[in-house]
Image (cartoon, rainbow, N blue to C red; front, side):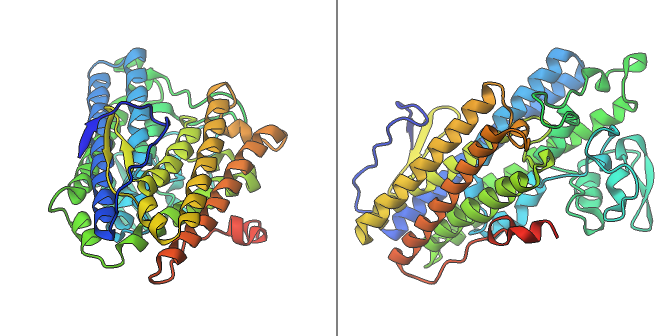
Length: 420
């Protein structure tokens, strides 16, 4: 059920005193997924409209409008990532829309002072392929006709070509690179600075191949909308993802698996601790746009959403119902409140990180080894995520069922292995 929102996003969240059953909790979980993926789809369509308008009449204002639409589209999508790990249908699909990091030289030109590999390519021969500049090329021993850049070319031929995960040809981050370009300056306050003239016609074109760059941007954006449409449908009434959850006797463990795996191995480990250990701006989740602070903030909020059974949509509408918190409170009130408190601490740490980034210290500046205050902000958020995971483990034990296994990360479990 969706109601008009009357409270701010992170305002006082009054949890309804309902006698939650497992079935009701799973229904709320599926309802939130439907709402959040629906919002991801609607904001991607807005992005599609902005891209189409920009390509029809390229300008600085048009490029900025497309960037703004991309940033807005990330807000609901990041809140869906908690549905990974516990739902195979999401795991099988997620790499199409949110894979990272990427070897951007696969897609377009790169600068020598940037991060993309320009020579050697021992680990990924396609890392410097530059599809936009080459209407025909050899890939894995075969000649590829790329005279027309289409969604099928991106999805079926280029994405993860040769089995290399860094060959990211589709999804949010491919679009991000095409809108912003490389973030050249390590540890500085600038994001990517691709000029709008990279899409201009005739002699005004910079970077070469402006028409093909526009074809790629349109194909990637159209494909994103199509992929999100599939997942939004999968969580709607009669959809396969919803049915799989509601028919699963161990469905509550799905929720906990997603919460714990995103908290620990994925967010605390691969997305935050790893970059801090390596002091590497390329480990930013949205490195071209300098939007990583928002990625982390909304990932954490998504975890909190499914625990509290409440999601605030992009239009202010609220989707809510019987929650995991209520179910856990019946089993062990102390554990329920411990997890609620831990989620609150994490959100506070993420809010602080977000505010500092927006005040002029982007996430890549925080990764600078000389920036002790920035590093401390990231580490504080990582520590909160790890502590939160311990509370999720306690919740899983209190609710019984099979033992829940969460995703791990060498950056947390075996830091020395990171440098081997």
